[in-house]
Amino acid sequence: MNLALFDLDNTLLNGDSDFEWSQFLIRIGVLDRELFEAKNQSFYDHYKAGTLDINEFLDFQLKPLSRHSRKMLDEWHQQFMREQVAGMITQPARDLVKQHLDAGDVCVIITATNSFVTAPIAHEFGIEHLIATEPEHKDGEFTGNVAGEPSFREGKITRLNSWLAERGWTMDSFTDTTFYSDSLNDLPLLCKVKKPVAANPDETLKAHAEQYGWRIINLH
Image 1 (spheres, rainbow, N blue to C red):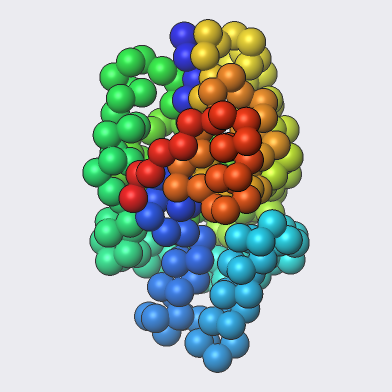
Image 2: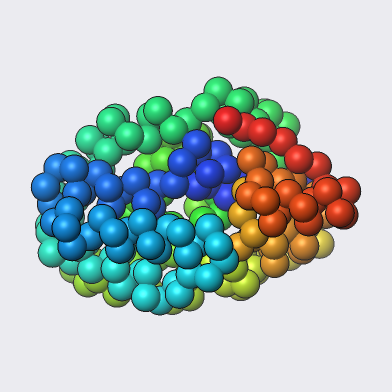
């Protein structure tokens, strides 16, 4: 039995769903462009540089969820999937996932982006298991807060270990463990698997992969 882990944004997707969700809400007039667009870009730049304050970002990203009903959010997300996400999914990414699914591997998307944004995307890839940052909700509606530890940097390891333990597994339960990621932020988890793969890597990750002989692929 093998474990295949996939980062989502800029790995399986040709783009960042977190960033694009905020841009989508700005475009349809839900968020004020003047107030939110520069902040959204700044957070994205910090993420790419490896300097993101995850708690500050989650406050920015999750608060808008609390201002609207779940029904309305779900309708907007369906539009987001059609108008934005569909064009971010490449055939090489679909083929890679299918290869692992056909091999009977346990496939998991593990992402810092919240599960409201990412669960429908995981479904689109045919991946049953998702480890994502969890928005807190009460009586079916979002509170604007985060529930538990964000699935970010070392937090991905913590969340993965908890997910495995719930199923009676550890990393040693698998013959092979593979993780595909584009980002320097995922170096902690990449160093924990048997087969780290730099997919569409940023410059820092690419240099690390070249130094240590990791596989490098392009899914875009």
